[in-house]
Image (cartoon, rainbow over all chains, first blue to last red; front, top):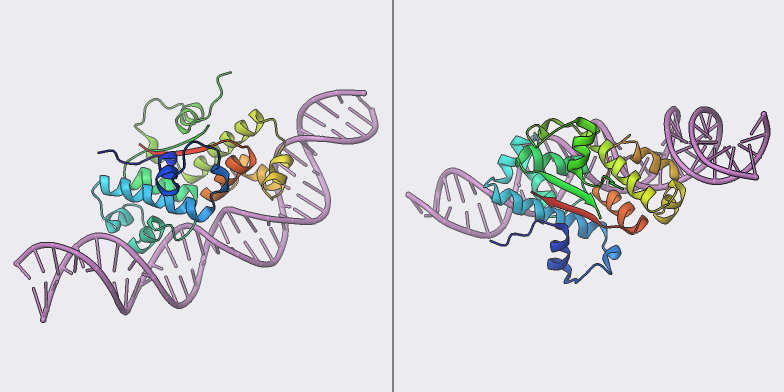
Length: 96
Length: 96
DNA sequence: TGCAAAGTTAACTAAAGAGTGAACTGCATT
DNA sequence: AATGCAGTTCACTCTTTAGTTAACTTTGCA
């Protein structure tokens, strides 16, 4: 179904980039937004509501909504918790 | 030189894991530590000192040290800034 | 050995995330 | 129309990161 799950694909989708030449200029707000979209896609793929994901990770649906809409920067541990504990998926991070 | 750069490799290196069966039990402290090691490896590969990385990203070497040693959880934007702006490398995040 | 560079730790402040409850919107379905 | 479900937004508190200074330790080398 051609689902978008990687950082690079999001860069292309939301900024129309090609290649890597101008990566450095993206700001934190844009970063939070892209990660939020990634989370939302993964949640929908897991067929969970925001409320279900919230309950699984010990938080509230209002907070999940905020993250998915990129309303705030988030801790790495928070993102990790939502993906791994909440969705049962794995968060892959690497430096290239 | 067999450098470790991915999350999964760190899980194996520091926790002796094989496969993915027990990923969920790792806590935030452990996560911060592993990310810190990844950052340090990437920084050394870029042949930069903590002080140089700090200056490039508008912070202090004391803060870089704290992150590399996993002393605190960090924002995704902070990690991104250090990797992309500071080291000129790319931070890859995906959900598997 | 002694010096300088590199790295660590503690203490502090300001800013922001994490967590929460409540009210609100939009959308189906009956 | 009315009910219920999913999601959003606001307001608020509490906790923590980000940023900084200064002092200390470790490392590498002349």
